[in-house]
Image 1 (tube, rainbow, N blue to C red):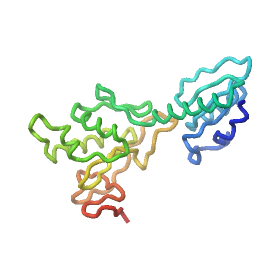
Image 2 (cartoon, rainbow, N blue to C red; image 1 turned 90 degrees about the vertical axis):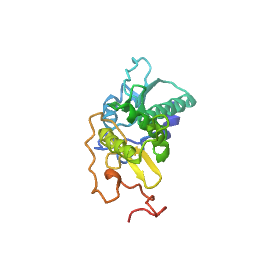
Image 3 (cartoon, rainbow, N blue to C red; image 1 turned 180 degrees about the horizontal axis):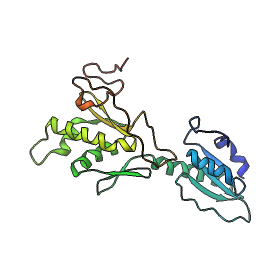
Image 4 (tube, rainbow, N blue to C red; image 1 turned 30 degrees about the horizontal axis):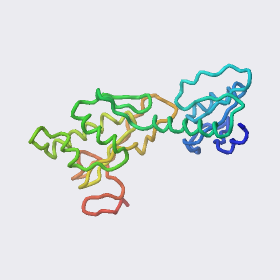
Amino acid sequence: MVGSARHETARVDPGATGAAGWDREEVQLLRWPFDSARREHCRALGVLRLLVVEAGSAAPICSDVREDWVRAPVPREDLLARMAALRAKARAHRTPRLDPSGVLCLGERSISVSPAEAQLLELLVLRFAALVPREALRARLSDGDRTASRNALDLHIKRLRRRIAPLGLAIRTAWGRGYLLEFDAGVGAPEASDDAVPRPRRGPTRRGDEHGGRRHPGVEAGRPGRGRR
């Protein structure tokens, strides 16, 4: 029954002002309609929530990807399965997606990119948060037997960094190896708000730094395995 699975849920304080201390993978069980006020508070915080609809009550309309509902009584196995599905949907919602028309989406936000930039993003999104070699990206820009120059790749990366900044994404440089697409450390993954994310501040440009790209921790030209001090 519902009560037997309560230890699987996040402990959300209705009087709290932020969700920084909670694991975004945890699910809060709420009774519906009894916990309607807590539902709105959890929605504002971006907390995953599963509404347990009480007998005789009308089912709620759940338009948020972070929310679902079940009707009581519900077997514990079914409840855990629905919670796992809710986590999976929310996780997918936080991962960048590039559609065939060249639109990059993250949560409810999106930007459009040029065909050449889409070629690069396809690889970067496919290996999100993992290293993509420079040569693999240059091959995407090649035209027949003509191999794209290093400067051409650098220019497209510079443009992409500006384009994806409002989504809270950044392209990191692994010196001498390639690039990584990941969440900007100063912005983080998307949560409850779908408003435009402020443009992250850029650090000072160093000589040799390819168009102001930030160094990736633990990867430095000529010094593999050593991060910034």
